[in-house]
Image (cartoon, rainbow, N blue to C red):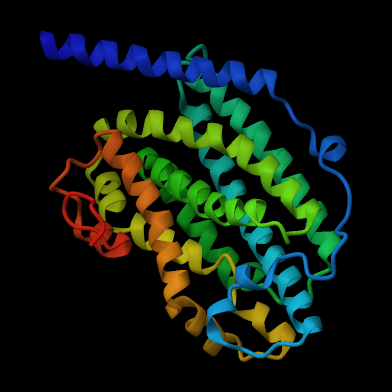
Amino acid sequence: MATRETLRKDRAARTRRVERLNTASVRRVIEPDTDVTGDFSQEQIVPDELLSTAGLGLRLTPEQKARLAREEVASMLRLGITFEAALMAGFSFRLAVSPRVTDPRFTYALHEIGEETRHSRLFARVIGQLEPRQRNPLESRLARRARGRALPHLMRRPATLDALVLGGEEVPDLLQRLLAEHPDTDDYLRRISHYHRQEEARHLAYARTTVAEHYARARRSDRLALHWIVPGAIAVMFDMMVQPLVYRTVGLPALRTWRAVRRDPRRVELRRQACRSVLKSLLDAGVFAPGRVPYAWRRACAVDASGVPV
């Protein structure tokens, strides 16, 4: 009986947090088509040290670095559109099968869908302004077919979806924070990063609130996916923020450069840092217990069984 009472109080506390997120979403509506407009004022919109190739010792001309910066940002925004579309599909599926339309969680899902559509509209506009020359493998027929087959399975696994939402928010948040804080980042790009991070902070808070609820009711396949597939998916997501064919636009070998970037110690540490942020959320939510972090998470994050970096 005491356990039921504890669970009831815990759910009530989570509901109050979701209600506060709903209130914040109503008060802080930002319309990117009017509030986040402008154009890039610098040829090289990302400083040298924040380019993905910064640790490789390559001798690139100013023109190559300027083009690479635009191609890398376009790649990140294109992946962002794909991820946010998958997230919205997952939320829409939950809403379609939910019997509790008056639950604050139902309302917040609608808020998040609305915010993600605004992000994607902004990203699409900015990609047009960047005029990328890359061929994006995400747009291939094979990639579209793979997404079409994977998404229905993902939508039926809410705990896994929550963890991937955390990963999909933490990875760009980390990279955008570095951009926003660097004095040599183009001001328009800095404003885009600030706007996106501002709203994604609420999305992270929501996923952290609901992941424990979904995990408690999760099927075995959902738990197995969260334990063994999600950490690898987050690592792939990080590595594909700048997809391989970007490098070909400045005369670099695509796969060889991409593999070198993946192995660069600075990028490895950034990837681990993003993964550790997700793991911390799962530990704080009680999904994993200290001392029992699954092996796939330990490997991806370079931590011990308690989640401490090694």
